[in-house]
Length: 556
Image (cartoon, rainbow, N blue to C red; front, side):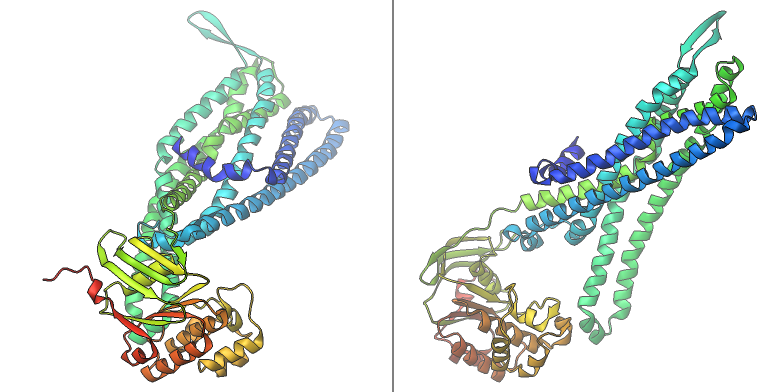
């Protein structure tokens, strides 16, 4: 039941929304095509009896017309199968698009994508959004349509099999026991036994599928980390270490895959034996009816087809078991992902005033350990304040609180009116053109003239000819160039409050001093708050505060 509740939590918002009525139409049309195909299969079953009876009696005048009829039936079945599948795939992509957008919205909402990294983040959220969302849409639709089709086949052929079975008498203790529709009961009992054996051999597949998805995602994430850190690895000659880590990660995949394949092997032995034996069960079970002249040879083949259809309907669980275990693992992973996002408390909303200000502010780690206590700071409009202190004090964390992304604090915090922009020590340069990089996070790019002027102001005029060039700028530019490019964003955005976290640490002190002069000239109306260890910058600020006096560390 827990699994079904998780699934409804994922699927309900989409399928209960009236705006998605067309998906219901597509799904209904796909199911209708499958139902029509079932009805034609019933006709094909009747064709089996007529054809084999005509073949047994060598009635050539009946055989050839029946062959043409067979071709027509098969052509219609093929069209129905293809278009039922095509419509189902259209439903899948529409639903997947909604699931992906929904998960992305939840992930980015309230800063969850960042805040979950501070606590117990579920493994590989990227894989859950990309791969698990795809599996949920495709597997859910396929299993649902398959179940409906199996139920329709069962209903359609159960009556056929019942009628063909007739009323057979079995001698028992000197008396005759009459069983109506005995082949139907054989199919039911056979399916029940097969379902029980399948569950016995396959119940561990859920956990193994869950682990396989997790280990595959870990391996892909590790490869991406190596690529992002390619230069550092190359400089340190760490190839052997990295290869060993990747081999170890892949060994986990292999180990779990072996357990999964062995479990599937055992299940496959059962399922294939069960299925292949089922092909002969109706022939053996139908011999008494044929000997009693209840059915003809053609009727025996008709019984065989009807039996296989009824057996397949009863055995949907058996044949879909592997898909069901993968589906259940997918639902569990996405449900866990949503649960963790639900646990994130709303971000506190700092008050707005005429200046940035905090009073008696206590700052904590996510685990509740104190960092800074009773912090009192004020940044008047159009002023510059430098924060200094030893490493590990909590300077960057304080800036995160000012930026509104750090919820672990107590006390009064007030931000100035207008736009607040924070530049971290390691800039983020998205993949795309240089113009897009320096315009980030704005979705609209700035005019060429503004971009070139800002690049020239920070000493990057040589990049002006590459505004439309697309590449991995994070890999192409040096650390100092990346930080200069980050300051270009501030010049273009013209924030009211600019917060800099060691934003010139990769630039020499003389260059950093020039950059700060440039910022003050380019942003005359902005208030600037900066954390830095570069002592040459002190003269560029109106005031300096050493945060060491607010440290919560106890003396030894």
